[in-house]
Length: 619
Image (cartoon, rainbow, N blue to C red):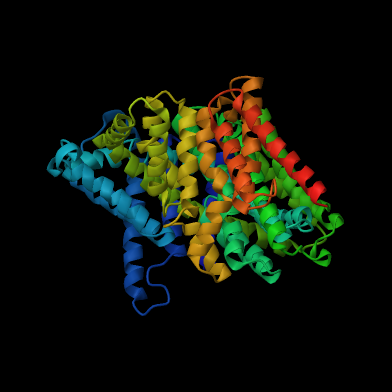
């Protein structure tokens, strides 16, 4: 959908604001956040109008304009009164109550229009719990807070809607959303698809492997698994169906691959930046810690796709449909991508902030795009592609901006009421001294709490409520946050509310329950990765070379054993023996002892050798 003229102007203004503040540094905390939120709310009401193409659109327009005016007034109030708010901690007045109500309603209404009703209801539940806490029964009871106190927390300070999450959205995430959108619209998107087709097309399950590679590449710079499915799935799913792949399998491959992009460095669906702020560690530490689990995830998906394709005899992509290497490696294709990555790397090497490094990447990207396309594309078309990138970035920033602003309100209420501490204490009390039991309960609750939410919002919620339970039983903070992040992420492929599967099944024209079953099988390794983080410190590249080797070996054994177990590919030639042997391998690989990964590898190799000898004897 093309933007109307006001929307184009607003998208350009948002992009200019992000570009300028990434280059020169952000304004003072609350000022930066208020300007950013004002811009994305205005753009949001243009992008997602109430009652569009309906007879009652005039009423919808009046509602949109009223909420927009209240939001602008609230944000302007913060900018004008910044010094007083930060120095005096003022009492809330009637004006403050009205502005707070208008701003929160605008944020939640935009969240409803963009991601559905579940997230706004969670935020409203948090606000309601803070207000009516004194009337709650039993352990849910707390002292309760009046409207003035809630307003002071939410609006008149840096702990509520202007808190850290909104700050990250207004600086680091905004810069990388702009970076990613421009990269995709200046040739990076086609480069990703061409590279994926060339690398995976002529292998067994080639179309599924193309979907895995392309969706992973897109997913790394996308903030939403669902949006990623809708983008790449419209290309990959019809291709798989055309080549004879079962529709549920095609939908599952796309849903799982798109979800995997959210756990893959360097951007991890924007959650990496939020995690760095919450945990209080450098962004590069998050990337390093997430690297090995992401590699294991994609290797397991590749192996599963390969084995299922071999067993089902799925077709390869015809050679004539694959782009030639000369085209893929042409400067106009790879030049902007390489220049963007070089600019990003230079920024990090010079010690610049993450947002400023993204600015360097954008400058390199645009310079390479102009140089490689000069003479090939008219200037008008080049400008049009850049503007399309700005529009796309604007859409992404609306979703991320309102989600993180709403999440910040929810987190502030969780902290105000002590709900997070209470839930964590209850889990620890039930789990006793067993780290495994506590982790299992946290994982299950994460799956439930993350259902229906975009990646970043799901992570923020479970990080505030559940990560403290893990740290309380001795798990390092970074490991605890990665644990809850992975479970919150895979909730989008876990029935019954598996929204990524819903979208993929809709594109494939198949039953979502069948697709969900295939998705759980394809992504089975992802359910084990969080527990591997707890068992093997080397999984986050800590503990020394031997610990890292131990973790890598355990992971490698699992990414082979689990796909073999679930795809029913013969190992020894006897199904019963195969199941027993592979279950033993899995049990050894997850047993917390330095020697067991080596034993698991020996058992797997022994089973493979036995099967090979049996095949030769039969032949």
